[in-house]
Length: 183
Image (cartoon, rainbow, N blue to C red; front, side):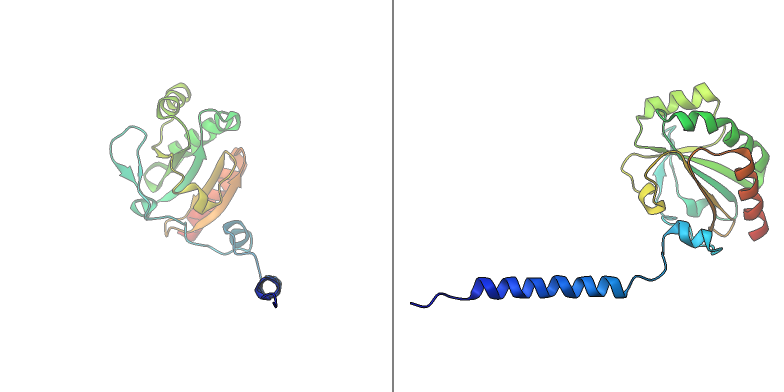
């Protein structure tokens, strides 16, 4: 009785498929399309997830980036347990004061307990609105994996600057200036 050659045929087909995928992947490695690469190249990519409405930390409604179109937005992902987030809080508070009616800082509490986020806001005197991203609906769209991370968005909803890590005043002032110039 002759043995069926089904298994060797499947192995050959799978191997051929993997090789084809590898060749396709190598042939299609063009420029990096990440948000960071676009901003570094001087492009003004639209802020991702503009229609995602996240609940306000205070429990009264939701906010989506598209609702803030026409204003400069300093989008800051943070958590109460994040030491650099604590250190940069005064820079963000100052930015909110200086932006006035032309913009806002929008805090995004990243996978944090609401009570702990509210205690953080109270302790540090946060003067800008915060939304909760407990289900990680927005953060992954910005490539956020470590905290804090900040994205400055111009009045047309385009990302003009990215700060991955603790902010300093010089970076934020420059980023807000860029957003104003794009206005």
